[in-house]
Image (tube, rainbow, N blue to C red; front, side):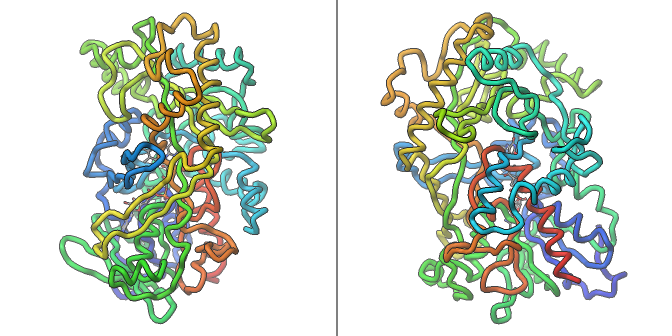
Length: 541
Ligand SMILES: Cc1cc2nc3c(=O)[nH]c(=O)nc-3n(C[C@H](O)[C@H](O)[C@H](O)COP(=O)(O)OP(=O)(O)OC[C@H]3O[C@@H](n4cnc5c(N)ncnc54)[C@H](O)[C@@H]3O)c2cc1C
């Protein structure tokens, strides 16, 4: 990927400067450079995606604490979790979080996007965004009304549908939840297997799907280990980015636009460092105010997960493989030879979406089922046979914030999620756990169950279940909405993702979601960036 001299452009000057090569940034880099007319610089704070575990689906467990490719953030003490700080992994590598995530392909509910539209965001209703989901997708089952084929992003069936994961689906059906073979089709509700962003047993990160095919384009320039420190302004127009690379400070000028795709934690941080954010916060850190934008860093949302761990009666879980040197080697050989088997397992095998209250219009809880167990994600698997299912409340009401704690661009931002601050959030988690237990106690799973290890059979009252959520609840890695799209005074970007009050600057990533979608967030971010690319190219004409 080389400089743009052949396009007659001064080194250091580009049409578009993109900050962050994550899920969104890789899509933008591909789409904006595709017609060859525009020069594009993609700046990524992390390295190239050469770490071997990135490309092996189960490797995501190894990347939770891998500093070389992970920002490894911690929240401030969370009042709703007894003052615990929650670990927040984020990808810091080409592909961003899509290079370290759990690979599940879930779009959310049709109603999520219709709600965005209902809040005044023209062009973001389900019918508007469906074409962009389809454009991105290369669905292994082929194209239909809801799916696309031939797009850059491979979406595949599970590589290793093990018997316990299948039994979980049967148990959910026995507990009264409908069977659903496609969570991304007509309706999300039900139980079934997940699909993953993989191809041939390998991870399809945004870097693999979007950046690799574009790498020989002369008008696309990618800089890694390049930390954007500041967006540069002339008056209220963004004109470039100052970044640090190999100890030196550099400047890239943007003739058309600066596109901020640093993710839900880093995008508001960069805006605040650049003088766009709550004026009193910026002054506190000696930063000159370009625009007093109170909404920057406001409205942070995240999905929490509360895990139930089961002891299994048969030595067929991943714990049994990992704890047995012979089986471990055989699993490695099988993967090396055929790209199949347990190493293709993602962050969930099967799952379910259900309502904790029949009066709700759509599901408010997602279950992720996994044929292994551990005390904490990313840590050693249990020495016994075990499996896990977690409750994830889909539309939390609690809101948090991102605020710089220092004017130093290398310092982490202060992250406050405020998990369980709302009564609805507390009740939904309690009711979700009760329904999950019904599934885990259904006949189809009986041949596999010895006992519930966590929270354990003694934990039954609402108070005790809530105490368990507070003690053990953690993130399921879906922060959003810190530079929210909308029309109200706290909205940061408009429906074309342009920063309100500033020219030449857009935010394109998970931070622009008006609110959190009811599901995993990678596919929605890729959709957002596909749509943003069209909006940007339309304005460039
Ligand atoms: C452990 C984990 C598991 C997950 N599992 C799933 C899953 O199974 N399914 C799913 O759908 N979603 C999952 N997600 C969430 C999903 O991956 C994210 O929502 C999505 O990738 C976010 O995309 P983004 O473009 O907003 O940000 P990111 O993909 O995080 O990209 C931001 C990029 O910007 C770079 N950057 C930030 N600041 C700067 C700067 N100042 N200068 C230069 N570069 C910068 C970062 O290094 C990063 O590469 C998971 C996330 C994690 C962390």
